[in-house]
Length: 84
Image 1 (cartoon, rainbow, N blue to C red):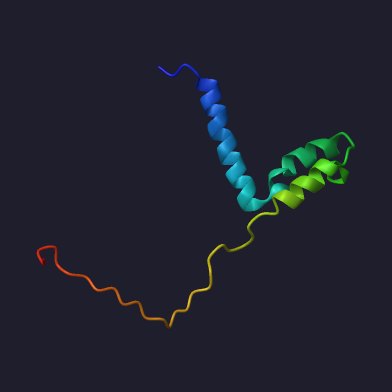
Image 2: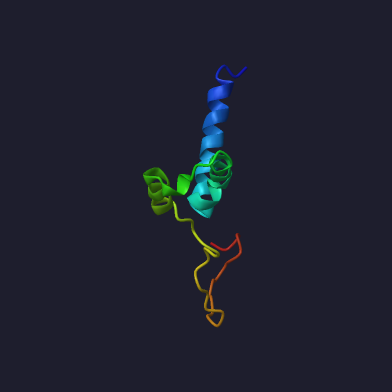
């Protein structure tokens, strides 16, 4: 029986949200927050907190793969397991 269900769930959700924020950026993650503040007439994008978060978490971008040289040759010798 798990005694700290809520703490465990909040920790896992925090890790997931942090990873999502690293990948997509603060601007994407904070969209529901900005919409909620806009509904009551406030603009959260003008705050220092929002500027700091956008600077700290800009997002990775469209692609995280390094350029690959398709013409390169990979030589990887292998031997049978019985060779010794």
